[in-house]
Image (cartoon, helix red, strand yellow):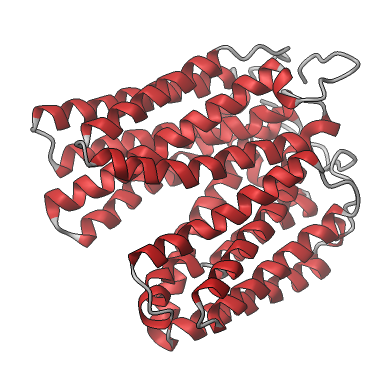
Length: 420
């Protein structure tokens, strides 16, 4: 844990380590969003193939899947700040390659896929390392506020960066690529400037037990297992976002502007709630609050499915985003606070894999269910399934349900041989 004065600054951003961390996360997210918009437009312009667009997501996901065990071990054995800075440097260089190829006119789909895979591999190391680093930047009592502030940064970037990327693409793909590369390099600089007291890490031999100890630790701690698995199933079942084009055109009878409004609505709700939580953090009964938020998410999903009025649908999506942030802040805080520092990298890597997988599988599940039963029944089933999972998890994981305060939550000790 970083050394802090007896009186922690009233403003999180007066604490330089967190301020640099927050800035790095904002700029890294903006870079990723800008690069994603430019890659999508350029790949489709080059190939005119929807399958090629699907491959963009696949080549980003596969490195996360293949590197999960290695990522966690690296994050627990080496300086996480250096890992993050190095990843952001690699992302900036890969985006610079895309910029130069666009300027030179020699860029084709295959080099874009290679660059995107490199960026995906770097982010596979960056994101778990960031998750594992944040608990060491602020006192435990302040962590919920810090988690909410970090969530607000991501939501703000998610709202603004894609629109900016689409506007800049009018000037040519090299422009958003260039700005994305600059943002990645700026994030690298901010990560390098983080100063904190670093606990010495032991360098035990790498064994099969230590490599899989992240899974072992999660399995031995029901509250953490419940938090991560709840995230997996809630996202898996509540994937209404994948069907928004169907609802916008065929049910709400609106155009592309309506689709854009629906897509931005959850982020607007999430941003508003994360700002509120940053100023008024959750104090008591966080476990029950989390389950109520998941149930509210499911109810809002069902309301969206039944709505035939655009503004009611937008309101339902806003509620979904706000409820999701409450759940995410509590779950991420419980997982990160309840995990010993020596295990945070491996646990964060497993958590990132589950979250990434659930997003991908959730879109697939929604598409298959909609093809079988129709879009409206598919979303109703997803919302109802989310509620059922929340009620079932309340019974299966009583320690998670009864968690009172975030700072008072503690998990079981790490499994033998798991030290980083």
